[in-house]
Length: 80
Length: 145
Image 1 (cartoon, rainbow over the protein chains, first blue to last red):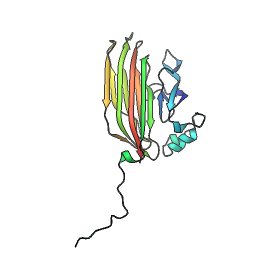
Image 2 (cartoon, chains in turn cyan, orange):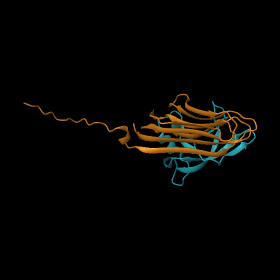
Image 3 (cartoon, rainbow over the protein chains, first blue to last red):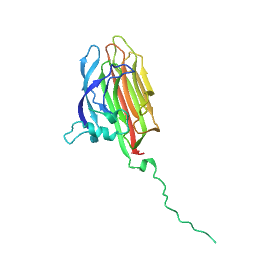
């Protein structure tokens, strides 16, 4: 697993949870950054992602994700 | 007279756990987590050409500091079929405000996920003030479809 910093999307509701726009990840506790702490709106977080979804420099590789999930309606069009 | 037939060209397909298996383990252990809305802490999506056997999922909540105004605290697991809508498959919650208030659920499961399906672990704390510990864990064996 490789750690990368990722933007958090979503409104934090059950229908639209705060999340990272990646197919497979695990948030690293304590790395959350808030856009508005009072309103509990997350801005970014460090996540662990699989080794086969990053390039040789350890950066997210959208092409590898598109290939790995090539039949998926969303991830096959992933742009990073 | 006994006829002996050739076994032919068909061979039994290996069991799922012998088809190029790989362990996939995820854990979120949040200590003294302040109240937050619905946050997707863990996500696992089955790659194309694979299937996945979810062998173990766990969700634990322990209140570690009392809230000013207590609200429900949830931890849950959901499954989203490829191209489908999300469904919660396991949910645990606490509503008390005492430190040490706890809820723990473990699933020793045989849930098969198909390519593109996603397993996701969430936390929610609708209190004001206070903190909770959260633990979400999964163990999956991924194998050739």
